Image 1 (tube, protein in one colour):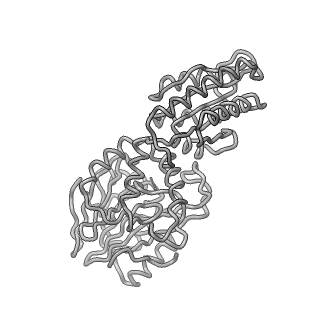
Image 2: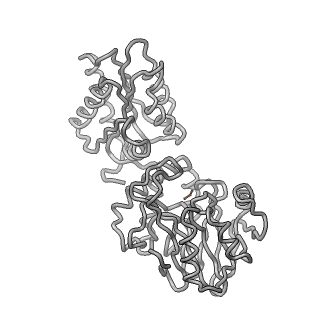
Image 3: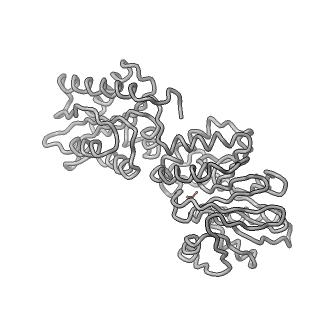
Length: 405
Ligand code: FEO
């Protein structure tokens, strides 16, 4: 999509798709790409809202020039978020439009200096401040830690568009359509969930604070920095983020394990079978050595039940499982039911560490803890059955959604 797309009169999407990058933040797989959404409001004054990653600066500038004409100018660059997937073209914009004023809050200014050495032509705004563009005003709402300290949202008081930064965004390039009514939202739901759980989830309390703060706004269109522009059903994406950030879960279980020689895998299969016999339909088993952390986190966040298995490795948790558990721990997962199991060759240690994580989390811990010496024996399997039945019982007792998030 090499030309601007009109959102309302004088408001344009000028974003770029990225299908070349393998890992977002050099961490998270992008099998279906990602979009960096940027917008132009061509009122009496012209405002650019956020930019794009430096890898796509050149076609991005072409698109802007195509819209404004060769001599067109931009009065303001509104910076809702400074992560370089959005700020990476700021320097090029300043060079192309030297009279531009960069609009951000005090924290934005610090990031501008630290990341790009920019200290001039910065117009500082605070929460609730407005900027007059002529026929409309832009109002700024500070939403710190969604998901960086400087993050803010910009509200167009005329067209009631909320330019929300990363909030309400998701992975997945915009392939032809850009609006929610032009796209198969089923596809984007999954990519929004993965984006949220991988990148924003740790800051869920701040997302909840922002949602409460914005609840009185009359929002007709949600225009985030990634993913679809929500013009037909903005409530949908707002509600979806509300459910994700309040850790609303689905009736189901993620069974995440590592296994060097198949013993812990055998135990994972047993747990899943018993969960199924107890009526749990949504069950995802992941081998942590094969499934990327991104997908482990997404399924763990989504399903109410979480069963983690590890062999002991160097007296601790098997490294790929450890990476997963550390990530979950930092995300402060709650509203889940957790069980742990595993195997060891001699002294053990891995399962004990998993148990410590589970007991210290804000989740319901289900006993017994099961650790097999070598291959699981019948008594180990019986204990696994007991744990899996307990998990299934707890999943069903806690009220949760029966359908997918
Ligand atoms: Fe899309 Fe936090 O940058």
